[in-house]
Length: 128
Image (tube, rainbow, N blue to C red):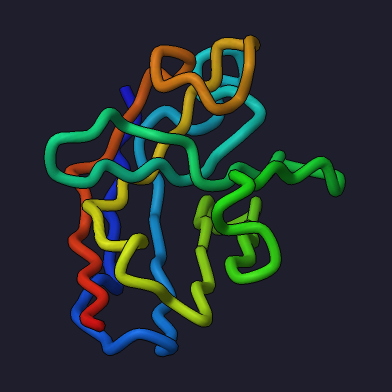
C-alpha cells in the first residue's frame, strides 16, 4: 500500500499563488503498483474530479490540463517521493479540493480511474 499526504492548501485572492506538496510513503518501490506518474487532480463542488497535472518518475513528459497550462508547474523529487504543484495567477475557477495521485494504470493520464492511490485532499479557495 501507498499513502499520500498533501499540504499547502489555503485561501488566496485572485491573482495570488500557492504551492501544494505531496509526500508518498509505504510501498513506493513497487514499480508496477506505484506506477510511473504522480500528480494532481481536483474536484470543485458539484463537479467531477479532473486531472490537473502529472509528472513521471524520470524524464520530462509532464501533462497539464488546458485550464492550468502556463499558470501551474508540477515538479517531482523521485528520491524523496514527493511531488509539488506551484500555482500562480490563481482564478476563482481554480477553487477546488486538490488530490495527490499515484499508481497510474497506464491509460489516459487525466482519467481518475487510472490511479490506484489518492490522498485525502487539500482545499484551495480563490476569492474574486
